[in-house]
Image (cartoon, rainbow, N blue to C red):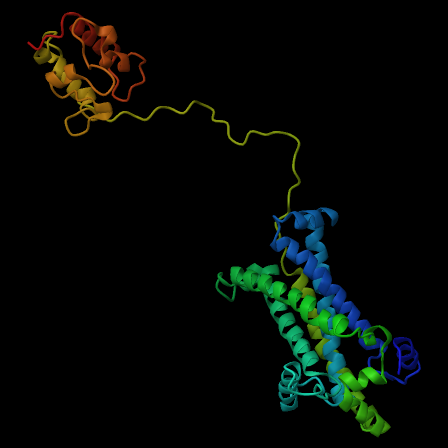
Length: 397
């Protein structure tokens, strides 16, 4: 019976198969480093009011530094994408490596076998080739996500240039798609990738470049069989290799140069970011009016006819009609006060009698008009006549 210690010893002496070259590993780690940086610096801007975001932004030196780091990481990722495109074409065209990352009907079959295995209806999981269907799904999800992030990032980075060809609604739409894809990508890495690399079993091939025979048998049994059979990579004639290389180098050189020019233009086409002004210690009044705000202009009123006698019918009624009828009438009793008839003037409003014969000081009309800032304000002479009329008994005739 074997023990965990003996199994560990056996595996330390088992045959190791090269899975990733140093170029593969460098590309992977540069890409994942830029991805993590983009995720952190992007999500803290999307959720800027979160205390965690505020802490991270402060640690990075403020929002301007956070944006700069985000842009540098995005640029680095685009450089990796240009390199990856050339490396993929080189392997497929020059070396004629089989397109093992392209999904086939076999992957759908492996997916179904994996479901049956998880449900306990199958004794073993599916045997798979160089890349499992899980790895292919993740690869193409990264490709699709990178395209979305690049396109929407360009729109947000160069909104003026974009809206010369597309409607303005594309900018907020790109912002929404960029943020949603960022959340989806971060969750995909945290849940899907971490599970298959660290939880399901600790896959060290991206660190060491190699994988033991036991792991190869579990994860990539078909590739292991091809390696042992010598059919994993067919021999390449040196002359054929040189001929393909002579075609590949100038062709990809032109493509890489055009993509690099576009990337530089992408970075420097516009300078549209709004600079964040740091808080100022000095307290500055934003608005200070030069003159006091005047009261509303009174509505135009008819010219008051001269008073024939200090009685309601002798001229006081015409004076009230000219200055007070706009707000204090039978239809619109502002403050409950109707000054349209002699009886309503004596009755007053909600707070007091409009006119108290013989007592001008307690009459509501005089109290309201005395400060001199009423909407339908009597002139000084007119108010004096009203007071004299009240003191004389406020007679109707």
